[in-house]
Length: 173
Image (cartoon, rainbow, N blue to C red; front, side, top):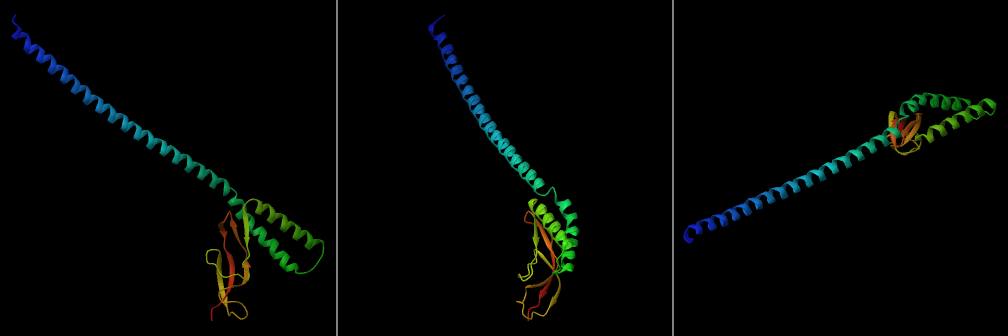
């Protein structure tokens, strides 16, 4: 064999080596792209899990805050009755009135410890978000747009309206 015959084989091995390098470079680029895509997917999944955890914690907190809403709603007529009984007793003194007053205060304390707040807006400006006007009267000595009389107290449960106060409002002149 002459040296000229070996020359094409050397060129072929160089071409194969360059081809192998090109293939390896392409595969390396593909692997890098796959790694980047997997990292992005992993970050998205972590963010989604974090959002789910936050959403679940918020839902649990709301459920805890308002778990006793039904019970407290059903107690509102009892509070109304005690309030009406105290109003009917007026300034009379005696064990019956004192017992009624003590029971009312204890019930309000227990309800308050569970997030219930009384809305008794007499003399305050009318607030349509917390009050329900059932009539208007001439302003007289009251400021126009203020609550003149409260027929039924309203209640908030953890700053959310449970029942609006039923009120009479001073009319604007």
